[in-house]
Length: 384
Image (tube, rainbow, N blue to C red):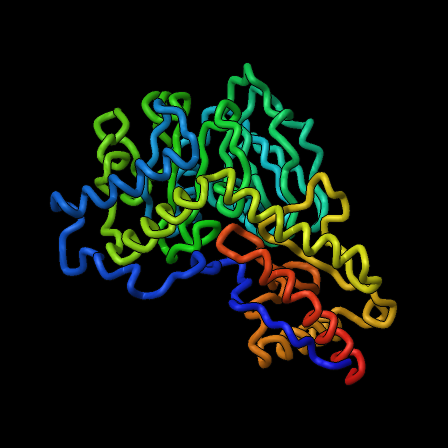
């Protein structure tokens, strides 16, 4: 097969860190407060602007708190688990690598005694109706490594007694978040916003704050996880006074991303861009006999971290190491041509491809990529 003539303008389809916003270059960081204290008036003002723009774009209720945490989404979510879980039984829903990690934290690290784990294989969801309104609930909105997303929040009770803890790092800004169903939500700048890594965001509802102020965990808390001060919420964390030193270069970068998002029409425009990219992929998959979505049910198919599996009989006849070698050959061909970078499936996921379709990716670049994937498949198959 001849190489396609049209190339993506930007070959960045990594699922994290993700593509920068269209038109980004280093000049976007020219106003960064380098060499300045993040606790100075100007530093606080910058961080406060990030928080306020994020609140606006997310349509976050005014009584919800939003703060910046260290260690990316992982740090933010672990801070929530370590400080909030314990007084009630816990239901954990897991269907891919990162949600499996929250199971490990709850069962092996925190050793919560009354934990109920509901798991499903890659490409599927566990039975969400098992959620008990008297229990705390831990789940990912979007499984980054499986391409599976919860279809809605109808399974979460309005009159629940427990808290909902939601890892939404590859969903927030790409899906409408039903805040009345969410008590704790975390994400990182490096996903849908295309920001730089290492900074997480923690959002708390009034119910979550009430739990923090009424419950003291039995285990020691590292300083980076301490969200209260003298028995009350440490308001400073949620008022531009971060627990540890943030990178003002990263602050400037995410501020640029947030301003871009606002300029194109806010969260609705970001969601639309992501869905358009998925639409291109869906049309191609429907016409391509040797590939399918890992999430076969369209109702639970992510439009950010899109995961694909190969269904070609020759490919399926291979053992897993040979399948991974075949995928690597495809990925290497695409990288060598400069048309797609970092689209191999996550290391713990089944052999396949993962294409990020968040808002910072141009839908036309996704469309231009697809003939190249066909070329890489046929080239690798001919060489196998």
